[in-house]
Image (cartoon, rainbow, N blue to C red; front, side):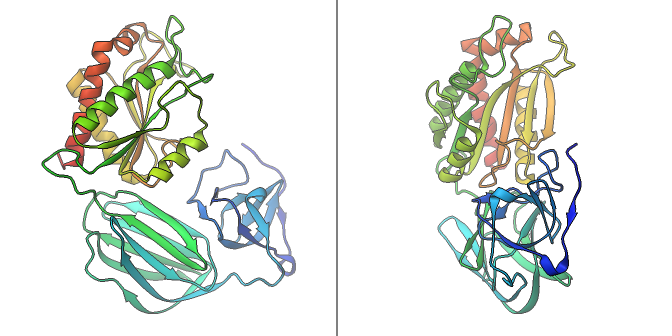
Length: 370
């Protein structure tokens, strides 16, 4: 655990900082071992109430690295009010506009049929919420839960959420909630999917008993899965199509740029520190945002049942390639490279084709409501 002395700043000397990173990483404590909170959109302002090393404690409770912020001139206001809210329809999303006096920190919580947005350092003077009949939102409720915190709870018409985005345009906060994709005929026509073949280049990934690298299997299976998904009508994008090395940030940025309906990172597993190479096997699915949980569970069960594969399990995990929130995004660990018996299945071209076909069928069934 990271730790040290926290400097408590005098109320008379509190600085105001603005988030300069495209997506400021907010955490529960001063170090990378602490859990992540909702990222802060670029432009967010907050008062600094404490320091530890190069970490800043913000008044609403989160910590952020100093190099993701800049200090604003003295007496910069940070407490905003809000009077009205309006919604506007885009081609495939609803955008909700929160006109503020100043950009404030935000938090997000997703549950079945609700999306809750919390604004900090803000007081309501709300007299108008303009929300017409909407394909996604049934109702918007709000509450001033503390003197400087407001919660907006969107009651949704579906128990599935298809991605969101938060950004500031000037001092107005824009929340984008993606609509369910419109598919036709029980297939994937109109769906946009990103596949991320893990590792590549000098980054080999896990190794088989003979040293064969995970990166090669990831790419082979991703190519096969792309073909199967396209045959079912989807438009499919690969983060890499050759044996090239890509950083995690590049992969995440690519998903954000494409803004797909679904995203999958394709991997094969390495042995845990205390693992048994002969007896550790099976399909694992990893998710982070609640909007991806049902997809992870469904695909895990679909593969286990239809391919007669062992189950490794379904896990919540704060991984770089589960964190994108533009779409339901999961990381698939489709088997253990080091397990000799599973390695034979992993590297069989016939089984790779069968896996790709089964995955594509499972995705199609999930999208079309099973």
